[in-house]
Image (cartoon, rainbow, N blue to C red; front, side, top):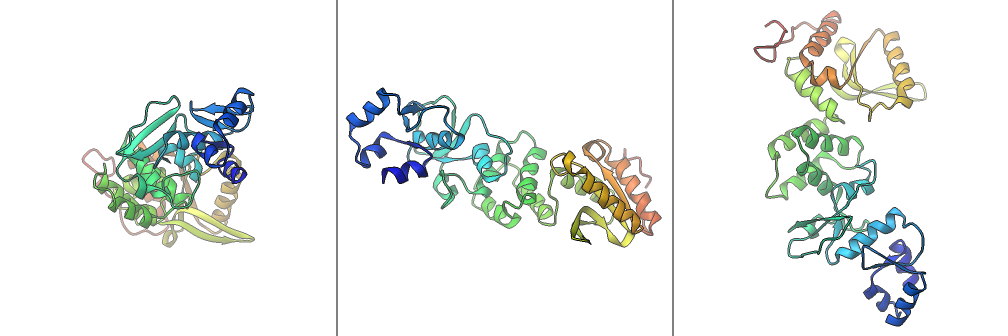
Length: 311
């Protein structure tokens, strides 16, 4: 029982767990005095020496917080593949009726929904991915940042728009509820990054461009290409180069894809963050020019009184 518990919890346990496994108080204290065991976060026992691995620290934080505690926010996102690097401090959510004394290296959030938000099987205890996403949207500094979490979660196929939508329905209070629900429809349609969401909203829709196909599949020998936006009827493709979606070591794949499109008589346009967020009107004008060159019969429309596109 002791060995199984220690393995499951990556080498850490509480005093109560040690006693429940048959160790006496004297045995525990002897191991601590002898340097074989040590304390993490003041009270949790580590049954090893040396630098504690990340998994042990996360387990220790949950055990230190006690009843009903779950890893949440960036820390849960780290375990779920939503956040790319370890968070510091460790973030936990505990039931709203609990009060936890301050512990260095741990931030505690109180929630009446802590039990409902907990993932039923993942260890160490943590929030469901949909709850993690919503927690991160609520501490985001801007709406764009909040929408970015939705796009990232769906783009990485960690969850679905429908599951996030259901989680939203379970929260009585939620900042940007209307905007988040609206964006979920776009992520379900294939917008897998904030840059793609901004292109859809600020370039395509705002200027009356035709609706492109998101994450369009194009077969190739030995596999397939995925295009960010494809206007198939007008042989035009748009690639949106966010660093997360198009890291440097994959640039050669983009080049081969662009060349294959050109060989098929298609035009590929490539835009970055500045093109889409700072000069969306100029970007829309250029996309429209290429679309019209390939036969699009309409004209783009101005997005407002100061838009340089003529009415």
